Length: 493
Image (cartoon, rainbow, N blue to C red; front, top):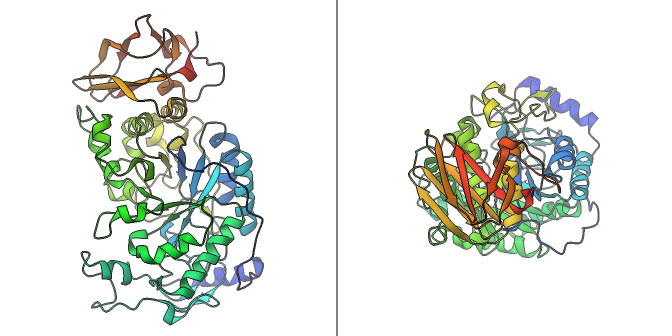
């Protein structure tokens, strides 16, 4: 890849605008104490893809904290190549925390602000590779493909023996982990020097209060190379490894943290595209066949899979919302909601002004019903959709309560979570009007799939209320592709 002359001049201008960053990584602030894990089966996280640091900070205070999100995965923060595509952030040119998403000071403020709101920051860490070509980085770093001043030189990279240095055989573990992915300069992560440099970068982020990392392209890094890096960091650091299908075994990475449940994410596409497929999917015996629950990040989509079509994305509207609701209703994994921006072409980044990513502005009333009106480059804010918000609260309310009182008929599937919650999904176009048994106590509840997050004293309109009879039954009347969700958090009387 090459940078245009115009972009080069912009990069040179930034050199004067950005304070000089020392070659050695700064120490930053003192690490915050932690007694509980930032990411667990009882918490809910969100990936705010391509949100700038000021916008994430604001969102933590106004929405994420108050609405029950416990952690947020942010995009890579290091300096990157110059370009108008989202993937430029995955081509590091240095480990300076200066990028189109914000400055080091803005990043540090975001971490601090989110912590005060009860939200932990998880960073997308790009440590498998550097850039695919020599150019000038966003903060002015001049480099070649295999030469990064103060960080790496030629001997710090793998130089694969394949035909063109890239991955020719995806069934070869050697090629997958030592050849170049898409032409990106592949770091020799088995080198003690390289490991130490990566460790310094991650420790710098931890010193600012970051609580964990998503390891990008983790399957392209040997487990043996990652172990000393992981061992060098505090024991309470959260790790999430990106390990897609292939020759690398996700189970080996789960010994050091979590992997993303991509198989499960792909399976939800049919569950919420074809009527009746959802049936039985909350069965404990079926869930037990998935990847290890307490070491898996469950998700419906992410920035890659929403573009390659292997999973549902925001364009599916209500079906995407229902899939997220189901993820939050079942006792599986450590759920992560995805929230990105509207796109037609796969490569463009969100809206920007003078190469700086614009502040995230959500629709006035974010909803699955209005996604078609969102212009490309504008943020969709799926994490604010009422059904998703309501089920975030539901998830935290039911905890580890078991699945029971299962209802399954035709296109309709539902279950209770102990006596703390009940959900039912209609995954067909026809209406559902029947009485169903639950494990809930008698009373009137708000349908959290409609009203979203409920305060300590729940309130909802008559049309949004669900009445549970003395025998635990509920009389339901659902339209096609709709859900009902009630929990003790939403009991009115």
